[in-house]
Image (cartoon, rainbow, N blue to C red; front, side, top):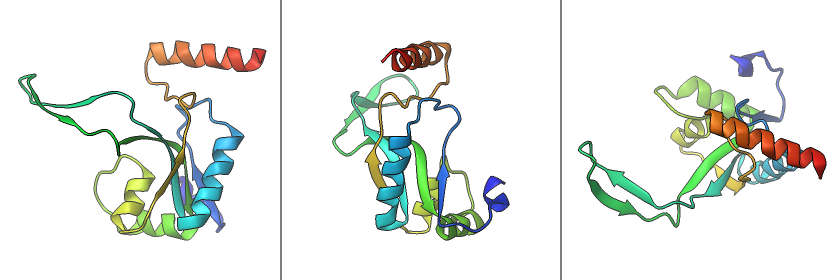
Length: 138
C-alpha cells in the first residue's frame, strides 16, 4: 500500500487518478480545512433530484438532497489518523474518508469543483478534454 511506503509526515493527500483536472487551489483548500479536524474531503452539493428506486423500477421515495454532497478527491488526512484508520477498520469502503468516519472521527467537507470531474466513461473523457483545452486557452 502506498501509505506504508511514505515516511512519517504531517499530511497525506489522497487523489483519484481518474480526476485529471485537480488544481493546486483545491489541494491547498483541503490542507487548510484538514487543519481544523485532521480530515477533509472535496465535495460538491448534489444538484439532481435523487430517487430511491425498487428493483422493479418503481420509485419508493424522493430523497431530500439539502444535505447530500458528492464526494471527490483530493481527500486530506493527518498521517497518523489515516494510518490508524487503515490498520483498525475492516470491511468494504468506497474511500479513505469512510475509514476515518468508521473510527468515529469527524471529516470536514470543503468546496470541490464541478470541473474536478471523475473520468469513467468516454463522455466524461470528452468533457475533460474540452475543459482542459479551455483552461489552456484561457
